[in-house]
Amino acid sequence: MFNVNQTREDFPILKERVHGKPLVYLDNGATTQRPARVIEKMTEYYLRYNANVHRGVHHLSNLCTGANERARERVRDFIHARQAEEIIFTRGTTEAINLVAYSYGEAFVNPGDEIIITEMEHHANIVPWQMLRERKGAVLKILPVRDNGELAMEELPRLLSRATRLVAVTHVSNVLGTINPVRQVIEAAHAAGARVLVDGAQAVQHLPVDVQDMDCDFYAFSAHKMYGPTGVGVLYGKNELLRKMPPWQGGGEMIKEVRFEKTTYNDLPFKFEAGTPDFIGVIGLGEAIDYLESIGMTRIAAREEELARYARQQLKTIPGLVLHGEAPRSSPVISFGIEGVHPLDAGTLLDHLGIAVRTGQMCAEPLMRRYGVTSMIRASLAMYNTLEEIDALRDGIRRVITLLRNGPSTLQHR
Ligand code: PMP
Image (cartoon, rainbow, N blue to C red; front, side):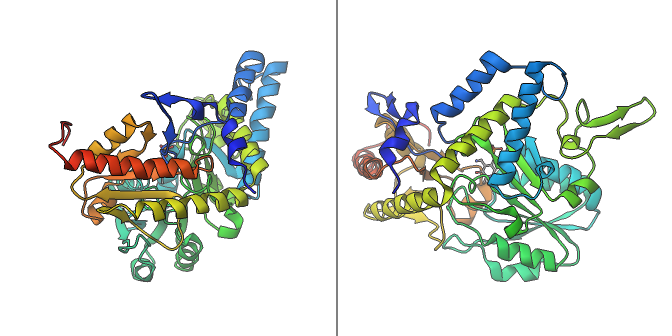
């Protein structure tokens, strides 16, 4: 059984009040909260052990280097990668995807080559490919989304061709919550000779992930969405592929030998980690993984499924509320609109009740257009949310509707 009260104790921020009301934090898709032990671990390193990694022979430097590399091993184990050198630390998902677009694009994408993305991608998995299109004269193709929020998988064979170099797909939609059939995408892409990047930003905190079983070529995610610190993320890549890719940033650590005439590059993963990394952030990520595993990803998935089911059920009782996306396999990310109510008005009024939801285009403008709206309201849940908080959201929305329908909005941001 999942002990929610005990779990909430691990997150001091959940006891805060907002506008005099208990905080109901339902914006976990944007960033989760961090348990005290992650913050304490990082503080301990800053207070007692701080020294730059990979550079010193002295005690503190060795301590930090060891902790940084142990965290890499924790990440490897967490996503079931084969080797630690397949784990590259980045600033986040965005930087991981940009790394691939730049470096893989440099080595493998030529004019006329094709990249396939989907209609439900976050801007972080759209814009880097558009930039590659500009740089290399590549062609961008889009796999559509069905009304219910699933990928239109039957379209994939038509889009794949001998010119496809890469398919970039999100594991879980940050708007619809849909869990995509990434294995099926990967099988089809590989059969066509294409590589696959999976954006795991909304997946690693909710589901057990096994990159070897999935057989993806790249997998990207951010620490701050999985109870770890901001400023750190991961790019997993298959060793044989990463070896063939050129470095994308030059500087310290990514080199073996520097001469003015010629420089040779370091081995994996350091070839892709130029400059001082956020090693204390990395250590925090390792601690977040320890925390997640102390609860167990299967247990977390089951808990969140229960929360998501209850939330969808409760939201459906509200007249005029339209849920966007109801794919059979989904994570606890729920987006909706309310007839006659602007999402920004709803978000602002909910905030006054202490309820934090996301409103706007969720960094997925093409998907907004797909659903014929300019913005949505999103409640994204985490394991520490409670059924009572979902009730508070339901009741809050009912109050907002009453307020806004019974008179002109006093809010000015339409
Ligand atoms: N992809 C998805 C699916 C996301 O939800 C996000 C964050 N909202 C990102 C990419 C970008 O992550 P970050 O801002 O941490 O780089």
